[in-house]
Image (tube, rainbow, N blue to C red; front, side):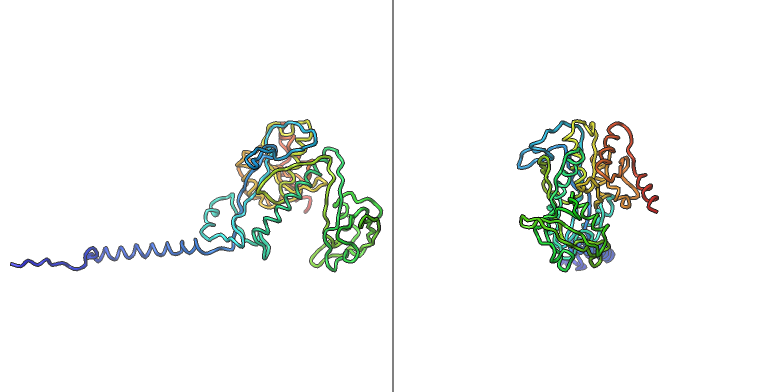
Length: 377
């Protein structure tokens, strides 16, 4: 007898219902996997802004494997201090030359400390990440010198300033009148004490008025007449020249930082310098974080990334967060729980706020924003 083994020929796929279920699973998997793979591969026109490193300006940083103070004065008497004075930064993930994928944006959707924004919020047309880094490095260097000038003036020491013409705008009021390298000495026979004076007097004079400017050109003193004009797209009269500002400081101020750029640490640098240069212990053990640009005359200017810096201050367990009063419109609806915020407009106000908190009292808070907005309305 010959025995025959009869088989359906379908093997493991012999069950039609199981076959359909398998095909459905593969179809569902493909419908999910393909969009995810595409989202991971396709670049987006967005960047992520998130809290960056926090640096204690009264502490040390590691440079070439050695600990170095962030702020020091090689030839000035300094005093010990206590507490922590943090400068705050933001990180921007994504650039025109290194775009973030759509999938990489997803975690920021669920993190209140991060912001998804168009690349155009951070980069001008044609600008690369290298261009932006170079600009921020230059702004950081400039802000450090300006912060030192403001700090020395705050403690009553004289700071000399030299204004030099760095560039002339073609077709501007200065074109053909000033030259690159001219040192601006007087304005209408009064000594020019700082850039703020030059700017204020120019605006007050108005377009078409005649400014009599005393200059030093190639070692010789002379006087030129210049009529400010309002540039296309502008609202205020300008002389049409880029001015380089240098300071004659009572002492060299040495700031050591790496991989941090931009001008927004100016106020904190000034506070750290004042604290080091004066015998009083300003912070009295507090942890204070802050952000804001600093003019050589002591004005605190607005910055970007306020919400992300608030989160950085909160995570650093700050007793007080100092912000520019010019950023009041940028205060988010929900700030990190427990963060005490003090808006300030000048270095003097910032010092007062820190000293008030150090004494156990509450400095003026976000009610200042409401009061200023009411007054403005």
